[in-house]
Image 1: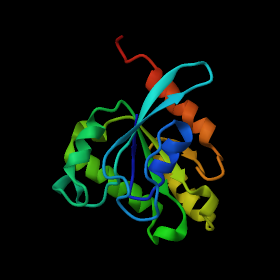
Image 2 (image 1 turned 45 degrees about the horizontal axis):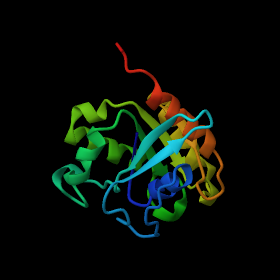
Image 3 (image 1 turned 60 degrees about the vertical axis):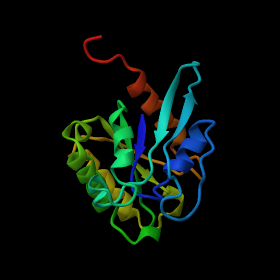
Length: 176
């Protein structure tokens, strides 16, 4: 299970909420300089591993930002949770952010672009404009992607997301 998204999308905060991992969390880009792993424990005692992948930016497949070094880690995951900051703090459009990261994944590897994806709207507690959430949710529905909205600060939606990720990651692989 890999967490992907722009820098500061909430990946480190989420992994710290759903596992015992304690990655560095700060309000500046590229706080995460190496992948962090966390083991998520479900109520029925099943576990799965989540990887907090450093933020991806436009041009990552060409080495921009932290580049291809971390895209290789994403290749090893069965499922991606694509975290998108819906707060106004970024000044960017959430749907555009989603598309940029998906383009980077596809440019690096078509196999990666074909991985199962959950769209996760983050920073729900800080979002003022409900249209930012609604537009991302519409886009996910149009693409047939599962959608979750969470706030790692308040805990809203976290348990539902944690179990949804677990059910998908722990499901038997097709043909096994």
